[in-house]
Length: 200
Image (cartoon, rainbow, N blue to C red; front, side):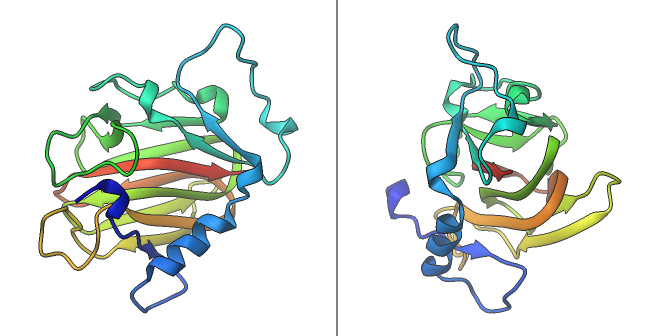
């Protein structure tokens, strides 16, 4: 099964029904693609320093993970784009149960398994990622004071080639004002993130 053939579903806070592929397309359309920036982890000699305060609003930043090396600890590589990661590792999945959504590289929670955090240098209004997990996963957003703003969840495992009713690379998104950090957490499990995107 090719990665493009994988059905994408969106887990939302607003609905109790099983999301459909149309829901995911609508969610992706909500991002203003005209103002989307593909954010590289490497500094080019001619690449300008990004001043997020001068970006057109809304602007979405999608992280290009392909510049990362396999098994590279990911923390401040995207700091100039406005995000710092904690407990994050870049991997090229060798286990076919964790397919990528695009490209070869994904993020996973490590060295502490089952947890990954992203902190934003300026508040953002939307965060999303395609998630594949071995267990139920909770995606949470917090304000400047670490107060919970919103939460959504992948209800169970969505590994490829399993009997899970949920497809791998399920789109999880949270849209709420003044997000300063997000966490991805699963108890006693592993997960991968692809196409991490946030909007100012």
